[in-house]
Image 1 (tube, one colour):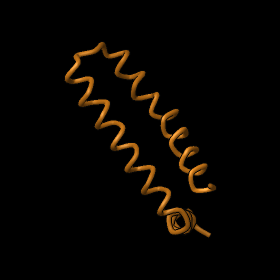
Image 2 (cartoon, rainbow, N blue to C red; image 1 turned 90 degrees about the vertical axis):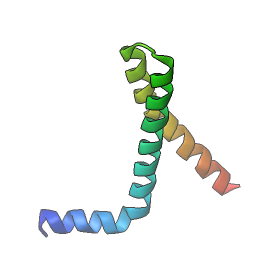
Image 3 (cartoon, rainbow, N blue to C red; image 1 turned 60 degrees about the vertical axis):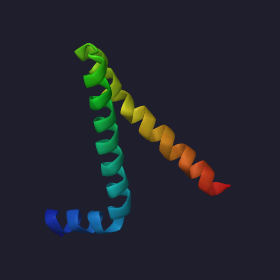
Image 4 (cartoon, one colour; image 1 turned 45 degrees about the horizontal axis):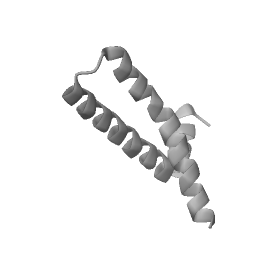
Length: 70
C-alpha cells in the first residue's frame, strides 16, 4: 500500500471528524483574532488564547459525547 493510498483511506474513513475539526479551528481562530484585534491585547496573551483552543476543543467534544450518551 502506498502512502497516497493510506492517506486516501484515512480521509475516507474520518472525513466527518476532520471536517468538524477544521470548522472548529477556523471558528476559534476567527473569534480570538477579532476579539484581540478589538481589545488590543499583548501578543503573548493572544498566543495563549489561541493555544487554549486545544483545551476548548477537547472540552467541547467531551461535553458533546456526554450529551449524545444521555
